[in-house]
Structure formats: C-alpha cells, structure tokens
Image (cartoon, rainbow, N blue to C red; front, side, top):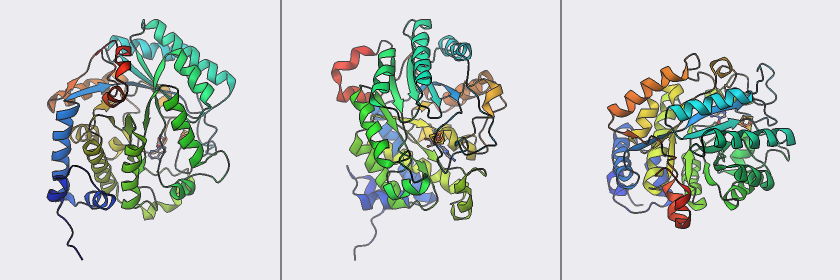
Length: 372
Ligand code: 5AD
Ligand code: SF4
C-alpha cells in the first residue's frame, strides 16, 4: 500500500483527486496551516485583498418549508413570524447607499404565493430606483419557478443564492421531510434555472451535519467545481433545540472542530476555484466572534453585514447563538471595518464586487458592472 502523501506534497499539485481532497480535509491542526497559507496566496494572486460588503436584509421568517435543521421551519410554532414593510426595506437600502456598500442581499424563508412574488419584484424595482441603479441586488428566496426567477431578474436582481445544503442526495433526504416539496432534484433544477435566467449563482453547504463524512465534503467541493458555480456561502451546522435534527446533537463534532473544518473547506475551495466569490458566513461567527476575519485570511472575500431592523433580528434564528442580534448595524459595522483593515484587506467601496469567475465565463457581460 502507498504511504499517505504529506499535506505539503499535495499542496504542490495543480489539481486534487477526490481521495486527495479527503486527505486535505482531514489535515490536523498543525497541517491545516499549510492549507491556509496556500489558500491565502491563491486568493491574493487571483482576487486580491479586496473584501466586498453586502447589506443583508432578512426580509421575512415566514417559510413554507420544514427543513429538519432550521429554526424557522414552518413546523416550529415557537417562532414569532414577521415580514418587513416596504419602508423598512428601503431604509436598509438607503443605509447601503450611504455607507457605500453598493450591494444588498434580500433573504427570506421560501414562499411562492403570487403576492409574495410581486412584492419582492416591486421591492427590487424600488431599490434600483432609489439608488439610481447603484445598488446591486442579490436574492436568496429559495426554490421558485423559472418564470419567477426571470421576473425578478427583469426587475433588476442579478445574483441569487440557493444552497444545495449537501451534495449527497441520501444525506439531503435525511435532512428534509420525505415529500415532493423537499427534493434534491428540484434544488438542482432551480440552480440550473437560475443560471439559464442569467443570474450569477451562489450555492453552499452546511459543514458538520450529523451523518456527514469527509467523503461527503470532498464531493461538495467537487460539486461546486462541476457546477462551475460563481459564488459560495458555507458554514458550520449549528444545532437548534426546536428542530428534529437536534436529537442527533451527540453525534456532532465539537463546535471548534466544525469551525476548523469550515475554514478548511473555504481554503480548499479557494485553491480549486481561484476566481469565485466566497462569503465569510455568520454561522462561523456563532462559534468564534473572530471567525469572519479568519475566513477572509484563508480565502473568503465577501461579508454580509446584517441590516435587519433590530426588533426582528431575534426572530430570524435559523440556529441558536446567532451573534450581534442585540446590536445596531452601525455598531457591528464599525468594528468589522476596523478588523478588516487590521488584516490589511481593503473594502471594495461603491463596487458591486461581482464574481470574477462569472465574467471569465461571460466576458461579454463585463459592461453590466458599472462600478468596477
Ligand atoms: N445551522 C447552520 N446553517 C443553517 N441554515 C439553516 N439552518 C441552519 C443551521 N441550523 C442555513 C442553510 C440555509 C441558509 C439560509 O441557512 O444552509 O440554506
Ligand atoms: Fe425555510 Fe430555508 Fe429554513 Fe428550509 S432552511 S426551513 S427553506 S428558511
């Protein structure tokens, strides 16, 4: 039998086989720093030291789905449901404009009613109007029909986030109710529809789910690559006591192990997809308040400061221990800006910070980015 290749040796290679990814993901604490260093170099050489900020608005926690891991699943009756008013969303847009972020993400539970579809479309139009086209809009509103995606794109949204959650169909099934509403195939179809409607498409997974293996995570990285995805947001799975998955909490890695694994996933993804956008996610911050900054150092280049009005923040708990729910956006932001400059990263003010990968695939679209 061949001896296990060293992490240092593997990192010298241009591409990794599936088994090599598994070895890299299982690197121990000492070895993982080699992966982080390599990812940091790859990041610098491909996307530079810019960090793009996107104001995140958690528009509503009303959701028709019932995912086993999520605190705002429809079956959780302990949640006070809310929806922001139009003026609350437009206030957040004004904040984005005043702060020179130039980008906004509207995220909510999944709803497909015609009223909801129109309300979102109108909001997108109004944000575009208010900002004279300066704000780039990302939507994260779950699986929808291709027609709805087209309508929202026509209204002016140009990026969409829809996580696959796990690329292993069997594990996906374990994480969701077994009905026609929660299927792996529909999720894949939605990702394809988004791509075909012209969106820059982001996806992602949870890391450290019960029953998930290193093998699954290596497949997740290969999934992103095979889908030729433009953006990724991924982070640790954090258990929530009002969800069915909570019963498996004793099977989980420790939170710190889940965070390390998440950082290794970010770093390896940066190495294998050098020009995509990778977000430093809030779930990471639940485990370590400095985790977003650590993620930036090992490959991430996007941060989404939360602009949900304070009075709703405590109702949008997909998982427990979510940070900064009692702080005003401005306060959290000041600290974030300081921490970013302390690691010698630069904020891409007034810039949509679109995925370079998208433009490398579609050089003809470069002119749609007015702020680069
Ligand atoms: N832990 C971590 N992430 C979660 N999400 C939902 N529930 C959890 C949880 N318990 C993530 C899912 C979803 C995104 C909006 O939030 O990946 O796609
Ligand atoms: Fe709804 Fe998203 Fe939570 Fe699933 S993960 S229950 S779709 S908000």
